Image 1 (tube, rainbow, N blue to C red):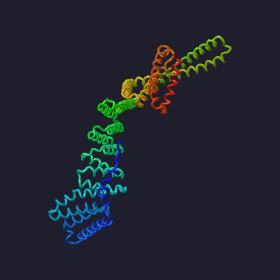
Image 2: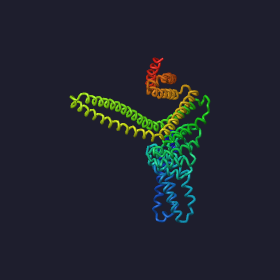
Image 3: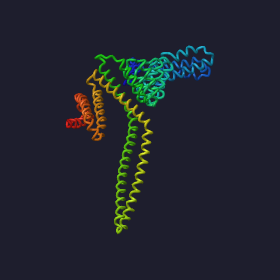
Image 4: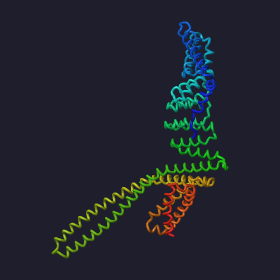
Length: 484
């Protein structure tokens, strides 16, 4: 992004006026300063006179003396500010006296001489890193010439560097309103608003910047980032589409165009992740209900089997009691014990039935969530497909775009992992019916990923993320080879 650089520009003001002074004899310069000081002393003395102090001309003379000191000598670094304030005093006195000289004083207050003096001495303070005084003088210069963009630009920059951020916003905004088109100002002002978490204002500024500089790609990229910072993914995507549409597809613009198309793919992928954040909790919740219900049904079946065995044992003991009266006491004790076990099993069975009924009701209540999940998953898939499509388009234009190669490789890798997960969850019967065919497709997708990872390796062989992913992929493909 373009940064605002002020020092080299401000040197114009400090060197432009004083360059000739440097060439003058030191004695001549001292004489000029002495003359200016004498004029100021004389004019200040006049303002102390009871009659003269009531005349605007007296104060105009003092203002002109301060102005001359600022422009020709410069020793008094606040002479320009004193000139401004003294002209204001003269204007106040003149209006009170009838206003005969008001026009001339107002012309002086908006004149080039005073403006130059303020700007020159403001630049001097800036070069000394005295941002407070520099800002004060640039603000006065901006009021002297309200239509001039330079003073408002410098006031904004100095305010920003001096951490007077609210004033920086004011003068950057004034610069823009005056018709200023400096890209760095639009960017700098938008960053100030972004730091305040006011993304709406940041977006507004950047839109104005793009309108003033329609060909500047930095501002367009900044606008997309501002949309993202404000959670406006849809706007970011639309703006990126506009950037792509406005970029000619020719050799000169190929790399930029491919990069923008890749970035659009990344935006789609980022939006897909927002849907993932919504689908995963729903999937987890519904999977957990199904898992708990399956476990409860398994426990119920085991309890039923256990109860059946206990009831059979009870029948056998009752038959023995009839046949073995001599062992009645021992058999009755066994009967009592088994009867208690049957009762316990009945209690367990009832608990499991209630749990299953509750989980079944929860599953039924989640039927609406199933529809919601289906919709969310469809949108997630759509966005990921759009991401992959744009990565491929970017590679058609620039086959060496590393990020596009890497992103499409990861897309295929992750896609294969998801499908493989469904195979891993199959029971043996289902696996034998269709699992092997799906595994072949999965291995094919992993091989697609390898093609793009190999390209990445040729571009950046030392990338550590790439090395790690390729090691994982290598292990997976070895397993695929064993299954053939």
